[in-house]
Image 1 (cartoon, one colour):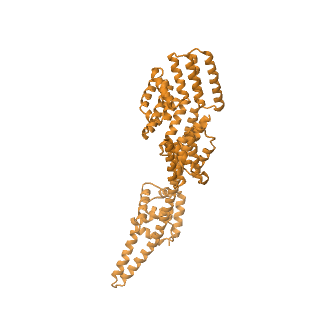
Image 2: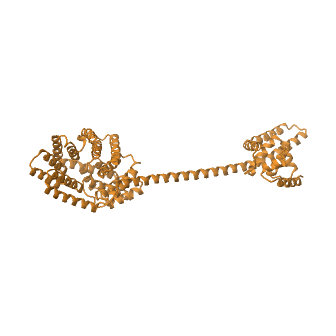
Image 3: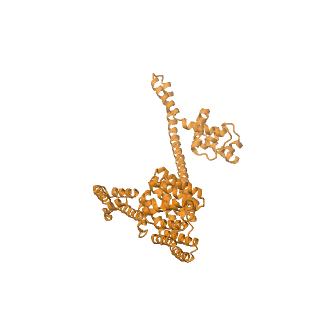
Length: 519
């Protein structure tokens, strides 16, 4: 049957050979996500990494690391995955970057570099917040749950455990839910809350059938260990189920403890303990098995055996101490979260500063544009005034000529009316400035355009006086016309000095200069 499956996989790869390299690699990655490792390996063997682009080669390397990890093969070094991280960072592929950071973290953790592992996994978590791939986010949450539980950081483990359960439920993946529930049960057990541990374990049992056979062993071993104190027969049945799937150290040590409590011959117990130590495939398993063996012999008061197991256990601890740096995983994670928060604050401050600069520049541009428009209006208004004066003179001459020139007069009159209609903006601003002066305001910070708008509005109030200033004085500036208008409004020297923001001596000198300008 397996041979037929492999033939089918090869045929499938041949049929898809016409796909692009990237499509083929994405398809292989999908096989890995579905735990179809044999199919993924066969298809990967058909890809030549030398012919790939930089991005596709990084994807190829990520897939090889992922396949080794899922096949329980050791990763030679993290150099390959660091290259993947560099490439996916430059290509801004957050999905692949998060997965690469995840496998860098896993590699570091398996090598005993725990602080680096947690830092890389927290980076993966930060990147994964912006992606939709639940598979990657689930792996990250599950690992942080497991690692914090292993490091006895139960509160952090529970936080990530609840996130993992929520995400697994959202994905409607019973396999993920089973693991999420058993992790929460183990966390409660580590916290000494046996009732809560049993509650979540009972919920987990309903999902065990959805867990692949190769992974179901861990569930049976944990159930056996947790139920051993209350129901030896049930614990024995679960341990045997695990052993039937795959003989393993945890099942054998659990069976040894059960047999010890049943009071069987010591030779049987010794055989089970020896088998458990023989099958311990990694330092973590070996440490657990030796610890349980030591406690079992102490319980039997077989101190010679307990001493031997204790020496072996201390040896494993010494090896672990050489490999594993001194670390405080809570502080490692808290420091990373603090750094990310600080970075977020700095980004927000930078954004606010940039936004403020943009607003200031926009305001300055609007002011400059408004002043430009105002100058253009003033220029156009002066031209209109000259034309109005010229048209009025022409109308007067035509009326004196006593000719039938009504059409010409009507045309010129309409043109004059049209020019007056083009002044609403200037008159509107002039009205505001006039009201400002009447309410006790001053001309401080006024510019020439402001004086002009005020004068144009006052022309409506007293047309003859403004015309008198324009005709009877020699080129009065707008400021000097404003000066004359204020006295025409019955303001005294003190009031004019206050409005114009000058001294009374300046008022007297200005009066003298203006008398000299009168034609």
